[in-house]
Amino acid sequence: MTDIKEFLKKSLNQIGIDDNEISESSKLKNDFELDSTEMVDFVLSIKKEYGISLNLAKNDDFSFQQIAKMIDNELKK
Amino acid sequence: MNKRVVITGMGTVNPLGNSVQNFWGNLVSGHVGIEDISRFEVENGLLKIAGQIHNLSDDLISKRIRRKIDTFIKYALVSSNEAINDSGIHISEDNAYEIGVFVGNNSGGWDISERGFKELYQSGADMVNPWQATAWFPAAPQGYISIINNIKGFSKSFVADKSSGAMAIKFGARSIEDGKNVVAICGGTEAPITKLATVCYAQTGEFHRGRDFSNGCKPFATNNHGTVLGEGSTFLVLEELEHALKRNAHIYAELIDSKTTTDIANSSMQYERCIKDLMVSNEIDVDKIDVILPEGNSSSTADSIEAAIIRKLFKENDVTVPKAQFGHLYGASTPTDILSALLYMENDIITHTVGNYRTLNDIKLVKENKNKKVKNALIISRSREGVNVSLLLKKWTSCNERG
Image (cartoon, rainbow over all chains, first blue to last red):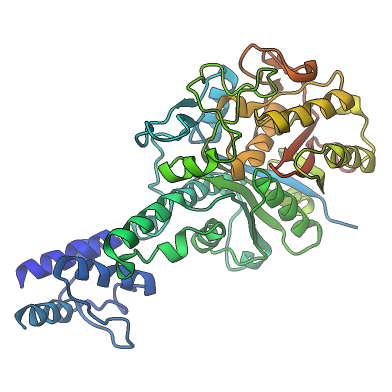
């Protein structure tokens, strides 16, 4: 999980979100205010790293911790 | 009666400088900003030299925006920011709907497109970056300038080859004359110094294929040189006269009028009419034009047409081509010519056209910097296929209260 979280932080940094803005409970839409293209950018980075396609562009809003768990669960399948 | 339009702000990034001050210093000194292309390997490319921008700081653009934009948008954001700051205009919710953005661009965002092609053909459609959809197209700079500055007024983008920026200035001014806007942030931007872009531009057959740049790109040379591609962005703040006077803005000049006509590529008839109409309708005699900045793009057909008409209409006037020092900026070309004319008015100097060579029709280019009070300047733009734009600028003085 630590590696996954480090990767997610790096990916969010590349979008322009600083470490000090990121916490376990931070949500993609409410807290980071990712717009639709930034969301695609984030999902693409996960796909490139792990080969996993997460569907985050729904109405739901996911936290940093939830995303890390989703990736972890997918990798364990 | 139409409202009058004045210019109250200037900003630029181009191969001669990343600010108006640096640009002017290098323009006056005769520095040539054209060089061997250093941004990519050119051995198999068709163009070998270009006017390139170096060491541009984009700190004023937030990290989140920087990730989303192409180079031509970055140039536009930096130069429009300088122009807005120079004008002293404060943009707020109170005036956001009275301010518009008018941008000329010829060929969109090449960096992002080349990245998109690589992603598509190497990794597949679902690996194409999401900015591909929003950063490549010619209206993108208008959008980002509006978003970053919270501008919400009537705005437009223009694609008209080498006259794209001239059209942006013309129609930005018209939006003020017609009362749609009080202020218009107008200019152009271009960033075509990429591997694919230079191949595409070269296919017009107009470009210099060698490495001859020490004397600039030699507009109107009898021994035709060929156009040299450049990159950059210039923005001007156009403002309704009474609005500018009310806030005690520094006024550089009044944009008196502009005309447009359309020729076919190798015809000069409408080019001549474009200039004559401007002179006649504004009742200005030939000898009152202190300096002419023509298109002068260094290609044989266009130069021949222009040289013949300029020689016919303006026998003794000073003619100079600043772009000889930095190449053709396409969308940013005419805005940069207007900027040069404004700086001539501010500094009482006309800069020379670099290089020593024989000119077509023996037109007399200014060959040494000339101390001269510039009151009226004529700027002419012509696209490859014959879109003509002429613009008349008059230096602002306190006794200009019309007319």
